[in-house]
Image 1: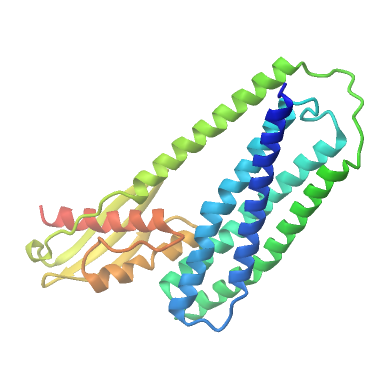
Image 2: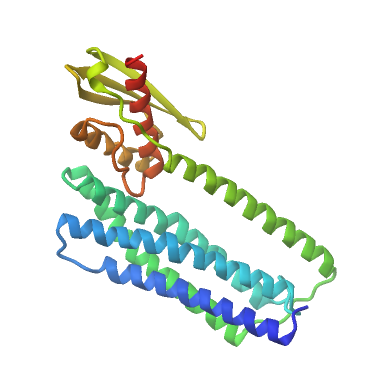
Length: 294
Protein backbone atom coordinates (compact mmCIF):
# COMPACT_ATOMS: atom_id res chain seq x y z
CA UNK A 1 0.00 0.00 0.00
CA UNK A 2 1.21 3.48 -0.83
CA UNK A 3 1.77 5.92 1.99
CA UNK A 4 0.00 9.30 1.99
CA UNK A 5 2.97 11.11 0.43
CA UNK A 6 3.31 8.49 -2.30
CA UNK A 7 -0.41 8.74 -3.11
CA UNK A 8 -0.16 12.52 -3.36
CA UNK A 9 2.78 12.39 -5.74
CA UNK A 10 1.02 9.73 -7.83
CA UNK A 11 -2.06 11.95 -8.07
CA UNK A 12 0.11 14.86 -9.18
CA UNK A 13 1.72 12.75 -11.92
CA UNK A 14 -1.67 11.36 -12.97
CA UNK A 15 -3.16 14.87 -13.21
CA UNK A 16 -0.12 16.04 -15.19
CA UNK A 17 -0.66 13.30 -17.79
CA UNK A 18 -4.39 14.06 -17.98
CA UNK A 19 -3.66 17.76 -18.51
CA UNK A 20 -1.03 16.92 -21.14
CA UNK A 21 -3.44 14.57 -22.97
CA UNK A 22 -6.23 17.15 -22.90
CA UNK A 23 -3.92 19.95 -23.99
CA UNK A 24 -2.50 17.87 -26.82
CA UNK A 25 -5.96 17.04 -28.17
CA UNK A 26 -7.13 20.64 -27.83
CA UNK A 27 -4.02 21.88 -29.65
CA UNK A 28 -4.61 19.43 -32.50
CA UNK A 29 -8.23 20.62 -32.77
CA UNK A 30 -7.13 24.27 -32.86
CA UNK A 31 -4.53 23.70 -35.60
CA UNK A 32 -7.02 21.63 -37.59
CA UNK A 33 -9.49 24.54 -37.64
CA UNK A 34 -7.00 26.91 -39.32
CA UNK A 35 -8.16 27.56 -42.88
CA UNK A 36 -6.96 29.16 -46.13
CA UNK A 37 -3.51 27.54 -46.09
CA UNK A 38 -1.29 27.13 -49.13
CA UNK A 39 0.19 23.64 -49.80
CA UNK A 40 3.38 24.29 -47.82
CA UNK A 41 1.53 25.78 -44.86
CA UNK A 42 -0.94 22.89 -44.96
CA UNK A 43 1.89 20.36 -44.69
CA UNK A 44 3.45 22.29 -41.79
CA UNK A 45 0.09 22.39 -39.98
CA UNK A 46 -0.50 18.67 -40.52
CA UNK A 47 3.04 17.79 -39.51
CA UNK A 48 2.52 19.77 -36.29
CA UNK A 49 -0.65 17.74 -35.65
CA UNK A 50 1.24 14.53 -36.44
CA UNK A 51 4.05 15.45 -34.01
CA UNK A 52 1.59 16.43 -31.25
CA UNK A 53 -0.25 13.14 -31.62
CA UNK A 54 2.85 10.95 -31.55
CA UNK A 55 4.89 12.85 -28.95
CA UNK A 56 2.24 14.28 -26.61
CA UNK A 57 -1.08 12.48 -26.95
CA UNK A 58 0.36 8.96 -27.22
CA UNK A 59 2.77 9.18 -24.28
CA UNK A 60 0.27 11.10 -22.15
CA UNK A 61 -2.41 8.47 -22.70
CA UNK A 62 -0.12 5.64 -21.64
CA UNK A 63 1.00 7.75 -18.69
CA UNK A 64 -2.63 8.15 -17.60
CA UNK A 65 -3.23 4.41 -17.89
CA UNK A 66 0.00 3.44 -16.09
CA UNK A 67 -0.55 5.81 -13.14
CA UNK A 68 -4.20 4.74 -12.96
CA UNK A 69 -3.21 1.08 -12.69
CA UNK A 70 -0.60 1.82 -10.02
CA UNK A 71 -3.08 3.91 -8.03
CA UNK A 72 -5.74 1.18 -8.20
CA UNK A 73 -3.43 -1.70 -7.29
CA UNK A 74 -1.40 0.00 -4.56
CA UNK A 75 -4.30 1.67 -2.72
CA UNK A 76 -7.50 0.40 -1.12
CA UNK A 77 -9.57 1.30 -4.21
CA UNK A 78 -8.62 -1.79 -6.22
CA UNK A 79 -9.09 -2.46 -9.93
CA UNK A 80 -12.70 -3.77 -9.83
CA UNK A 81 -13.85 -3.21 -6.26
CA UNK A 82 -16.01 -0.17 -7.06
CA UNK A 83 -18.46 0.37 -9.90
CA UNK A 84 -17.15 3.86 -10.58
CA UNK A 85 -13.64 2.48 -11.14
CA UNK A 86 -15.03 -0.08 -13.58
CA UNK A 87 -16.79 2.83 -15.29
CA UNK A 88 -13.47 4.67 -15.57
CA UNK A 89 -11.71 1.68 -17.13
CA UNK A 90 -14.61 1.23 -19.57
CA UNK A 91 -14.33 4.89 -20.57
CA UNK A 92 -10.55 4.53 -20.93
CA UNK A 93 -10.99 1.60 -23.33
CA UNK A 94 -13.49 3.65 -25.37
CA UNK A 95 -11.01 6.54 -25.44
CA UNK A 96 -8.25 4.21 -26.62
CA UNK A 97 -10.41 2.87 -29.46
CA UNK A 98 -11.52 6.35 -30.50
CA UNK A 99 -8.00 7.78 -30.52
CA UNK A 100 -6.21 4.90 -32.24
CA UNK A 101 -8.94 3.60 -34.54
CA UNK A 102 -10.30 6.96 -35.75
CA UNK A 103 -7.98 9.82 -34.78
CA UNK A 104 -4.59 8.19 -35.48
CA UNK A 105 -5.43 6.94 -39.01
CA UNK A 106 -6.99 10.31 -39.89
CA UNK A 107 -3.88 12.20 -38.79
CA UNK A 108 -1.54 9.83 -40.66
CA UNK A 109 -3.67 10.13 -43.78
CA UNK A 110 -3.77 13.94 -43.65
CA UNK A 111 -0.04 14.40 -43.19
CA UNK A 112 0.80 11.79 -45.85
CA UNK A 113 -1.52 13.31 -48.46
CA UNK A 114 -0.35 16.85 -47.75
CA UNK A 115 3.26 15.64 -48.03
CA UNK A 116 2.56 14.01 -51.40
CA UNK A 117 0.49 16.92 -52.66
CA UNK A 118 -3.26 17.10 -53.33
CA UNK A 119 -3.01 17.35 -57.11
CA UNK A 120 -5.48 14.60 -57.97
CA UNK A 121 -9.20 14.36 -57.22
CA UNK A 122 -8.89 11.02 -55.41
CA UNK A 123 -6.30 12.43 -53.03
CA UNK A 124 -8.41 15.52 -52.38
CA UNK A 125 -11.48 13.42 -51.59
CA UNK A 126 -9.52 11.19 -49.22
CA UNK A 127 -8.05 14.24 -47.49
CA UNK A 128 -11.51 15.79 -47.08
CA UNK A 129 -12.74 12.54 -45.50
CA UNK A 130 -9.84 12.39 -43.04
CA UNK A 131 -10.10 16.10 -42.22
CA UNK A 132 -13.84 15.78 -41.62
CA UNK A 133 -13.35 12.90 -39.17
CA UNK A 134 -10.73 14.69 -37.07
CA UNK A 135 -12.76 17.36 -35.25
CA UNK A 136 -15.67 15.07 -34.22
CA UNK A 137 -13.19 12.45 -32.95
CA UNK A 138 -11.30 15.00 -30.83
CA UNK A 139 -14.50 16.52 -29.43
CA UNK A 140 -15.76 13.04 -28.52
CA UNK A 141 -12.40 12.25 -26.87
CA UNK A 142 -12.50 15.47 -24.84
CA UNK A 143 -16.07 14.67 -23.73
CA UNK A 144 -14.95 11.20 -22.60
CA UNK A 145 -12.05 12.74 -20.65
CA UNK A 146 -14.45 15.21 -18.99
CA UNK A 147 -16.76 12.33 -18.02
CA UNK A 148 -13.84 10.33 -16.60
CA UNK A 149 -12.72 13.33 -14.53
CA UNK A 150 -16.30 13.79 -13.27
CA UNK A 151 -16.51 10.12 -12.28
CA UNK A 152 -13.24 10.47 -10.37
CA UNK A 153 -14.48 13.54 -8.48
CA UNK A 154 -18.06 12.49 -7.69
CA UNK A 155 -17.67 8.67 -7.57
CA UNK A 156 -21.35 8.19 -8.47
CA UNK A 157 -21.51 4.42 -8.06
CA UNK A 158 -20.75 2.48 -4.92
CA UNK A 159 -18.78 -0.61 -4.02
CA UNK A 160 -19.45 -3.91 -5.71
CA UNK A 161 -20.59 -6.96 -3.79
CA UNK A 162 -17.85 -9.50 -4.42
CA UNK A 163 -18.35 -13.09 -3.34
CA UNK A 164 -14.80 -14.09 -4.17
CA UNK A 165 -12.35 -11.21 -3.95
CA UNK A 166 -8.94 -11.81 -5.48
CA UNK A 167 -6.02 -11.57 -3.11
CA UNK A 168 -3.80 -8.51 -3.50
CA UNK A 169 -0.72 -10.69 -4.14
CA UNK A 170 -2.48 -12.35 -7.08
CA UNK A 171 -3.65 -8.99 -8.43
CA UNK A 172 -0.12 -7.60 -8.17
CA UNK A 173 1.33 -10.66 -9.91
CA UNK A 174 -1.15 -10.60 -12.78
CA UNK A 175 -0.84 -6.84 -13.20
CA UNK A 176 2.95 -6.96 -13.07
CA UNK A 177 3.15 -9.77 -15.64
CA UNK A 178 0.71 -7.95 -17.91
CA UNK A 179 2.63 -4.67 -17.69
CA UNK A 180 6.00 -6.35 -18.26
CA UNK A 181 4.71 -8.29 -21.29
CA UNK A 182 3.00 -5.23 -22.73
CA UNK A 183 6.03 -2.98 -22.30
CA UNK A 184 8.42 -5.64 -23.63
CA UNK A 185 6.35 -6.31 -26.74
CA UNK A 186 5.88 -2.58 -27.28
CA UNK A 187 9.62 -1.89 -27.04
CA UNK A 188 10.49 -4.81 -29.34
CA UNK A 189 7.95 -3.66 -31.93
CA UNK A 190 9.12 -0.06 -31.70
CA UNK A 191 12.80 -0.97 -32.10
CA UNK A 192 12.01 -3.22 -35.07
CA UNK A 193 9.97 -0.46 -36.69
CA UNK A 194 12.67 2.14 -36.06
CA UNK A 195 15.33 -0.11 -37.60
CA UNK A 196 13.41 0.01 -40.88
CA UNK A 197 12.59 3.69 -40.64
CA UNK A 198 16.25 4.54 -40.12
CA UNK A 199 17.84 2.01 -42.47
CA UNK A 200 20.34 3.49 -44.87
CA UNK A 201 19.54 3.69 -48.57
CA UNK A 202 22.51 3.88 -50.93
CA UNK A 203 22.75 5.61 -54.32
CA UNK A 204 23.93 3.17 -57.02
CA UNK A 205 26.00 4.54 -59.90
CA UNK A 206 23.48 4.72 -62.74
CA UNK A 207 26.22 5.22 -65.34
CA UNK A 208 27.36 1.64 -64.69
CA UNK A 209 23.93 0.12 -65.32
CA UNK A 210 22.98 -1.20 -68.76
CA UNK A 211 19.66 -0.27 -70.31
CA UNK A 212 16.94 -2.62 -69.15
CA UNK A 213 14.18 -3.41 -66.69
CA UNK A 214 15.18 -4.64 -63.24
CA UNK A 215 13.14 -6.02 -60.35
CA UNK A 216 13.78 -5.46 -56.65
CA UNK A 217 11.99 -6.91 -53.64
CA UNK A 218 12.17 -5.77 -50.00
CA UNK A 219 10.36 -7.61 -47.20
CA UNK A 220 9.07 -6.44 -43.84
CA UNK A 221 6.61 -7.92 -41.32
CA UNK A 222 5.55 -10.70 -43.69
CA UNK A 223 4.89 -8.38 -46.65
CA UNK A 224 6.84 -8.15 -49.90
CA UNK A 225 7.35 -4.80 -51.58
CA UNK A 226 8.23 -5.33 -55.24
CA UNK A 227 9.18 -2.77 -57.90
CA UNK A 228 10.16 -2.84 -61.57
CA UNK A 229 12.78 -0.22 -62.45
CA UNK A 230 13.43 0.82 -66.04
CA UNK A 231 16.89 2.29 -66.76
CA UNK A 232 17.60 4.01 -70.10
CA UNK A 233 20.87 5.80 -70.93
CA UNK A 234 22.05 6.02 -67.35
CA UNK A 235 18.78 7.38 -66.02
CA UNK A 236 15.84 5.92 -64.09
CA UNK A 237 13.15 6.25 -66.73
CA UNK A 238 10.23 4.59 -64.93
CA UNK A 239 9.35 2.72 -61.75
CA UNK A 240 6.31 0.47 -61.36
CA UNK A 241 5.15 -0.83 -58.01
CA UNK A 242 4.28 -4.47 -58.62
CA UNK A 243 3.47 -5.50 -55.07
CA UNK A 244 2.49 -3.47 -52.00
CA UNK A 245 0.37 -3.87 -48.89
CA UNK A 246 -3.40 -3.44 -49.23
CA UNK A 247 -3.59 -0.35 -47.06
CA UNK A 248 -4.36 3.31 -47.77
CA UNK A 249 -1.10 4.35 -46.07
CA UNK A 250 0.88 1.86 -48.13
CA UNK A 251 -0.62 3.46 -51.25
CA UNK A 252 0.24 6.92 -49.94
CA UNK A 253 3.85 5.74 -49.60
CA UNK A 254 3.96 5.20 -53.36
CA UNK A 255 4.29 8.99 -53.58
CA UNK A 256 7.98 8.37 -52.88
CA UNK A 257 8.32 6.98 -56.43
CA UNK A 258 7.95 10.45 -57.99
CA UNK A 259 10.68 11.75 -55.68
CA UNK A 260 13.02 8.96 -56.78
CA UNK A 261 12.37 9.75 -60.45
CA UNK A 262 12.97 13.47 -59.90
CA UNK A 263 16.19 13.05 -57.90
CA UNK A 264 17.39 9.93 -59.76
CA UNK A 265 18.25 8.14 -56.54
CA UNK A 266 16.37 5.83 -54.16
CA UNK A 267 17.77 7.86 -51.24
CA UNK A 268 15.02 10.47 -50.89
CA UNK A 269 12.77 11.78 -48.11
CA UNK A 270 10.09 9.32 -47.03
CA UNK A 271 6.40 10.21 -47.05
CA UNK A 272 5.46 11.49 -43.59
CA UNK A 273 2.84 9.24 -42.01
CA UNK A 274 3.87 6.33 -44.26
CA UNK A 275 7.57 6.22 -43.40
CA UNK A 276 8.04 2.47 -43.05
CA UNK A 277 6.41 1.55 -46.37
CA UNK A 278 8.24 4.42 -48.07
CA UNK A 279 11.54 3.02 -46.82
CA UNK A 280 10.64 -0.47 -48.04
CA UNK A 281 9.84 0.84 -51.52
CA UNK A 282 13.07 2.86 -51.55
CA UNK A 283 14.97 -0.26 -50.48
CA UNK A 284 13.33 -2.30 -53.25
CA UNK A 285 14.46 0.26 -55.83
CA UNK A 286 17.99 0.20 -54.37
CA UNK A 287 18.05 -3.62 -54.53
CA UNK A 288 16.89 -3.55 -58.16
CA UNK A 289 19.61 -1.07 -59.16
CA UNK A 290 22.35 -2.79 -57.18
CA UNK A 291 21.41 -6.11 -58.78
CA UNK A 292 21.56 -4.47 -62.19
CA UNK A 293 25.08 -3.14 -61.63
CA UNK A 294 26.53 -6.50 -60.60
